[in-house]
Length: 287
Ligand SMILES: NC(=O)c1ccc[n+]([C@@H]2O[C@H](COP(=O)([O-])OP(=O)(O)OC[C@H]3O[C@@H](n4cnc5c(N)ncnc54)[C@H](OP(=O)(O)O)[C@@H]3O)[C@@H](O)[C@H]2O)c1
Image (cartoon, rainbow, N blue to C red; front, side):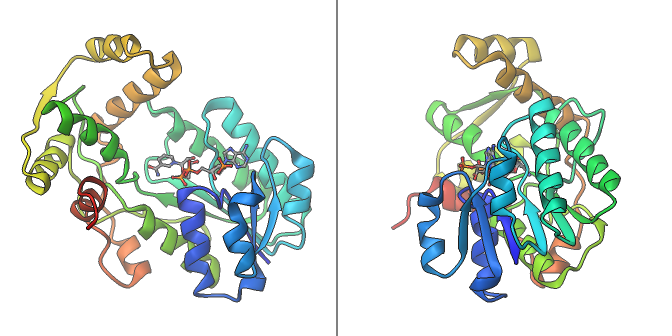
């Protein structure tokens, strides 16, 4: 039984959908916080059980009979994320799984100014310490991250943010397919190479693409970190969220997400999805 967590989220659901084309449904199980939201998967023959990283007993039930467990990284940061990952790793081991897969990041770095990269480094250390076979999928930066900045910029005509750097923006769909292939073929041991799209682009480049696709003008305006912090706080964003966002820009201008690697395209056996396609789907209404 292959167990996938976070299967009501974007990446997890994509992985299950891709896996359904590769292994029989009765060999797939999902661990989700709300089984009702996974009803469509149950109808297809996937085992659906409730599993919450903050509730070890629920994971014991959701991971029962697992051969492999794919842990979709937590939707939180810092100590809470690491505790949740530790709980999931221990539950996978207790369930008798022979391999754990974990959705790490291409920018994994214990000293990154962007906190999730530090959490991924700590989790990879937990996986190594577990002594179990594991695969750490070093996923590229989600291309969809650009959409929240660009959608706002399209309204105002200005993309105002601190200095950034190039990022190898990668499509959720490509990462989901890669994870499904890795589960079906058990093709990687330890950390994968960086699983990235084929090009790195900074926000000015992304804004140019968005402008070209929508026929609108977007001016990239670089502001100091302090000014950006003050404007986000004034908009009512929680302080932790503001610091997280500033950390992203600091890490990106240090080049932490600039690496482009052919591994994802090799694994998929096709070119990766360019940012342009993700923006087209996200910014231009269908029909
Ligand atoms: N590579 C990148 O650039 C990048 C960017 C952002 C985030 N990430 C990481 O990638 C992960 C998956 O991305 P995504 O786009 O699929 O995010 P998503 O759509 O928000 O899905 C996150 C999933 O985590 C589940 N979850 C939250 N708290 C949980 C808990 N206590 N126990 C078990 N499951 C829990 C959620 O369950 P519910 O459906 O019940 O809420 C959801 O299904 C994120 O959680 C984050 O760690 C990566």
